[in-house]
Length: 155
Image (cartoon, rainbow, N blue to C red):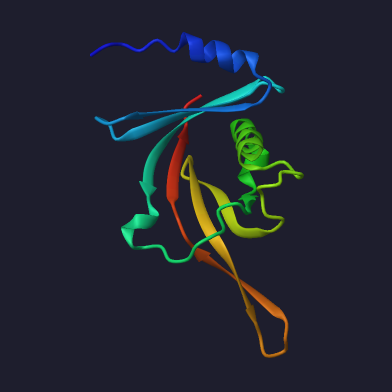
């Protein structure tokens, strides 16, 4: 097998002033490696996706608007550990949209939640469901719509 040279990509990443995501997949190990780099703050992090469950598995029901904003939720561990703080900053800058972006809907209809359990980051995606109750107040509930990911930081 031919070894690939990624020096051109590294040069482009270092010259850009934005958040960059680089992903690769190893079919033999069935594992994806992801690198996030934020040049403004000179921060980067590498992590591996250990396990994923997709929406097509028949387990998830619900949906979200293609152009809506995700509401990002992180548990308290993401404020305590330095590598998790870096992960939070980078993933937030990558997933959040510009306020004045015309394609993005001005509402939240799904939640992306990050939890830190057993030295792994667990990602869950939920749809925000709104129902009118008898007293005419809105009741909110969350419906898991997937995917589920289990992530390990490799730094």
